[in-house]
Length: 180
Image (cartoon, rainbow, N blue to C red; front, top):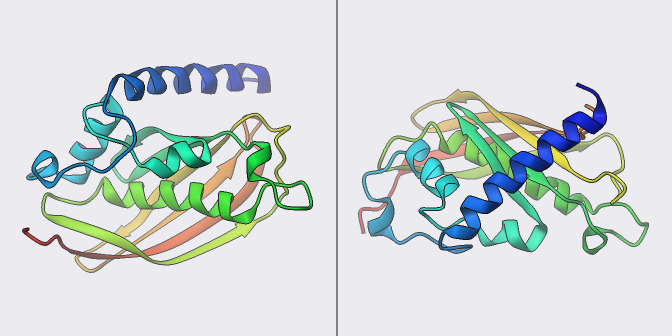
């Protein structure tokens, strides 16, 4: 698939996800009773269907979850002028947030009901500057290891032409969620 075809595919997938998210509750935090007994994968699928709220940071930074699988998560973002540093390139914090979301949600897909996680370490390597001339980028996260106490994952941030802009790794602490 060439670059215009891949971008068209990405934009079509984005529109389909946005249609479902816009029909749902919008950005916010799910109530404990809404997620009780749900595995991480179940929760992610419910969010993608528009049954549960999605993270408000996604609206703030103009990115969204596109797809999840067993140990994987894909996020897509639109770098815009509001994300630029004073040098005119996309701020490293935008890269880090998009990558952290893909990393964390890939780990989340492996959480059984009653288990949670939090980022303990995040390492981001930006290998190429990003400007708003690149219409979309994707952060593709994959679990490397998911154990009882720790999970690790890696991710790449790529453009529709396959250009690598950054890569990242994470270590997450895994724990029992409080019952109340």
